[in-house]
Image (cartoon, rainbow, N blue to C red; front, side, top):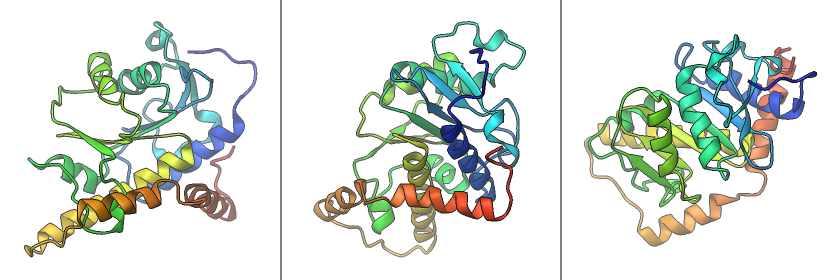
Length: 248
């Protein structure tokens, strides 16, 4: 683990801590598992991540670990990260510099989708169309995300246009350029997965958009002006109004 005289990257820490606490509020967490990370240097190898086995709802800016993906001794320090967090997030930050922020959860609707024999997400509404041609499905689950599994997953993320990995038999992993960008994508993917699964539960034939309209919609939403930043800003304002300790 990197040594630092002072708490660095305070704005980034506060954004990430807010995302943790809000994910818990939305029930998109799982006990003391799952991890969010954010690269803070130009090459993407130094990153912030949640401390080992702390509930999302309690994570504060000052709690976040600052790690170096190239540190071969990271798991041998007194305040070491969770081994699967290191295996998955460390590998992605080392091998995929375009993935500045990485969020992995076992949120229920995304995980239900990941457990289906066909884990694809057809464009049946605006939210599902958001991800048209912008996700990949990993159908080679190999157990807990220790380093070899993390490297395998990282290698699948080499295409920067694929910003969501539906992790078959596991959950979902989302990447982006910032905390705001990535959390917004995670939120909308969970909503999209819920819409699709609930639509299937009706047993009715689905109204699927054409590829042309799905791609047009996705392009229109790729960089919808300021939405992701406004989403995170509103979350932080709500937490501030409630006197949350996320930014401490």
